[in-house]
Image (cartoon, rainbow, N blue to C red):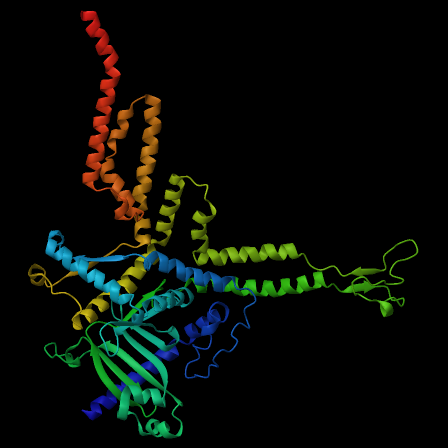
Length: 539
């Protein structure tokens, strides 16, 4: 058994070294991005080094912050579109449509959904901050990794965005990430707190001599090949967990997971690459160009505001004084010709135009321009707003779809598994137990509603055309084709109108009845003079 474990440790360390070697080009690329867009990350791609100075300056290569600001806005855009903190951005429902009509099943899944959001946004869970880092990583490096685990020592969830610089990925035959290796460091003191007395002797001896000395470790999560499904311990779990100390090449801890603990998403993906491609990779040439342009413009601006003086070599330079208010004897000839001239510099306005071109490209790549349209065009009509919203939904559909399938879906399944193991979920109704509790995730985020805006935009276009034809033909019955009792509430749902703002069917029926009664009364009042005249004539 010991020899078998030693072989496993050698195999996993060898796999890690191969993954590290294969990722050299990506790490170099990502480091170049970090230097200009996430300067605080630039040292995190230097594998096997942990000499970061806390609070050190990181912006030495940044002369223009457009890309850095655009990346922050990109993360905020994804957060507001996919996972807005102020609303329920998904629902849990039964996979079987028939079960969804059962009141007990509806109540059960509504309760599960409420518990999910309560636990996810609990202060100790730390989801909000880690989710923001997830989207920043996605925008900068094309790959975001969220580790979801149970809260240590008590019930609840805990989230941690793992930096790409310390994580290595492998995919299965369906291109789903199923093997993850995390490379990380801990001090001897921290390692003893986590692993205890199983540490190699060299690390345990450092506890006395140098407890803050850092050592490196691996955490592998892989499908368990020797799984025994009927066992209740980690040997029966689908995924195996191995913690390995590189110091002494020793297995420190073996465990397992029922569900894959890492939610890994890619922004874009190319064939034969397990890692993603990011907007920052597309914006990097523009960002580098913009930084060089900014340096040149700063030089030109300095020369323009404090120019070099050109003067004839006749002794004037010796007495030249550029202090404001000073007098330069001999600076002009007797007839007023200037002998001292500032040196002409380049065209600053052209430099600004060139920089604006690069800034526009960067903002386009990070979706900033797309979301400035509605803000900067308040004069648009309702129809134009619908069309703009529809266009955004079309442009963002591929990006959002991948995040829902690779990030949010696996994360929610992991959350439900952990909460179920902790006994925090209600008991399933018997009818749902017989269906083995199968469920599906229905997303209800702003971007999902934006994608549905095609229906609302189509309805508005139809109404506009019918109204024009109705006016031309004097035929108002054309508008009878629109079933507003169905369309109106669905349009309200698409645009996220709170249900409390809408009247209930009973209230609508009462309003219509009152309106009908008022019309009848008005008709009777209008008909009264004619009826009186007829009665008088009859006499």
